[in-house]
Image (cartoon, rainbow, N blue to C red; front, side):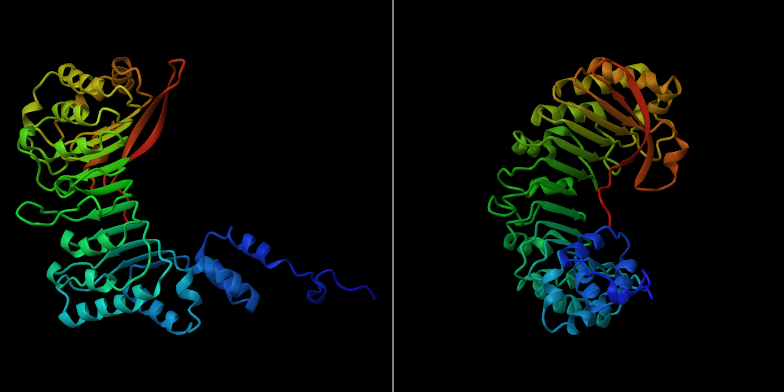
Length: 391
């Protein structure tokens, strides 16, 4: 009697590396978890994929991961983790001190074990920053970070970890930064390999010496009252390397218009290839002639001879902006105005519907216009995000 073609005893086992390759195409972690429960061999091959990137952004996940580490005395699990996100979501905006202490103690048990960690995203949640133990928690860690993303932490909280991780190439510090009146500085031996930065614009005042920075995202929490004393002057330090700049002026003082800011930036980093600006509300421009204001904005880009991409949005609450009047006369006309005055420009992206910006969201619906070498213009839907990556 012939054997069934589905007889598992006659199945030819595949090489282990092939199982690993097959599992790498499984996109959902819950499916990988199910596979890991199927057999000892499947468990061995699936675990590295499950724990390579760990998301601990809810309290249950944090405690469960501590338990998982305790159940792996051979330290295999701790050597697998490359990316880790920790975010404490307290049930109260003013959590009890005991809960704060427990959170930091848990972090202190996890981080020192992850010697191969390369990417760390950390947000301790609401509360007084004076309770932060971040520097203390990471002080004894031996990992060599390539990327660090911090939220709800002061610069002084992360300063020591920056000194201990010269390998960091990407740093996001999504917190208000106050440098004036403090001695906190990032001298040239701190973050010597930094390639991309996202931070409060005031962070520019803390950076001493040059870095090989290629991309910077800056957010205003207050803003410049005049360009003579603007911290944007410090962009000139990255004149030779900076090719992409995002400027979120949403909370900027309204004394300086966008065209003047662009000219100021262009004089300091003329090699920019990509510029993105989320503009501020400027009441004095409400009654200006539409063509005059648009032409000033377009002309300000002319100094950037290498500019290939430009993204722009008016302030979210600026319902009377000249920009909407310009779009009402034709979106393609606006795009052509940019292309005609700036020969190097290949892509321009901007919002065209005022109502779509009124709902608060980090993602703004827009249209992108791309210019082919032959001069043809193509329009495609796009999304603008001036707030960087959130997790």
